[in-house]
Image 1 (tube, rainbow, N blue to C red):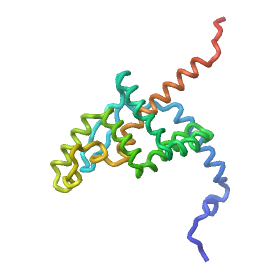
Image 2: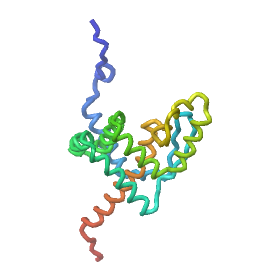
Image 3: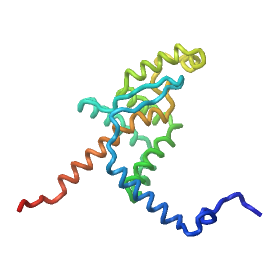
Image 4: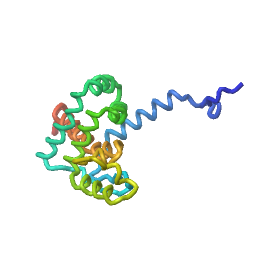
Length: 191
């Protein structure tokens, strides 16, 4: 009697699935380490209106955004899950874990408020345009009924908000890693 489960070795009898998964994770980690976060991303509001977002900010705005994102760690559920994520063995596992953790917290109103506020700080014009799109669309206008001051969370899906913020976080991590490797690397001798 079949359980409905498929044994991967049934199709690839010589394949060692655990080794393949480990190899993929290592390759992904190496790739993640070399990726340069995009300067622009395109996301959609709930009306399917496209928004091209510039994902670089001047230093003063960037530190305000980082301060807002650090507020996520004031939420107990985020703090608890972040410890588990940071215990992961590779940078790729940690990065994927953080994305999954934040997406998994989309039902936490405090997390949603912080992410929405951070997104608005980073992309105010996109939020303004998306609100106008929703107000002009008969199918979606009702989402704003009774809302006195609409924000990003009223007009974008949570995953879209995260996608608009991820390049900022990745850029800070990548630059920090480069700085730390420069500072901690032994000097090269010139002979």
